[in-house]
Image (cartoon, rainbow, N blue to C red):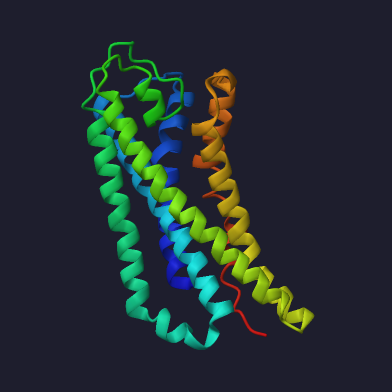
Length: 240
């Protein structure tokens, strides 16, 4: 768990450093500009760290599932080599996802101006500036990514159903409390992360407004990486 927390902390730090410093600079210097290269770099690193965050949260859910539902097999299923392989897969898949989306997005011709309705560069706002049918290619990539995200979501739901069923069978109240204390902070951060990002990108156009889009983007890009108190609770050892 501490190994995965270290990786999660790195993804949190990276995602915060990608968007917040530039937003603070623009606010302090009363400007709202960013170079095309800077925008591409910001989009790449934002997608990279956010994708890694989601993958790591999914892996940590599997860690909780094994530790609670299959404690006798924990050392076999989640040895040091298995943990290293899963973390490497999370970072590698995040890099590939960010590279594909960034390269495809910035290959589109932009002919509806150059003003983004957001405090950082993100794909939906950039696609609004494109007048080429080539944007359908990027939407196809987004659909593939959404399918993979949905697959992880199904796994998360299934895992937590099994976890809660196992916890409720624990005869000791203290044991149930310790088990819940390791799962609920992770579930709270994951729920905030998923609910805000899904609502931000799946809401109907009639509900879209600059203030709502800005609020939602802050909720999924800035808020989830910051509650370190919750993340620290994830490291509580599990014992019955």
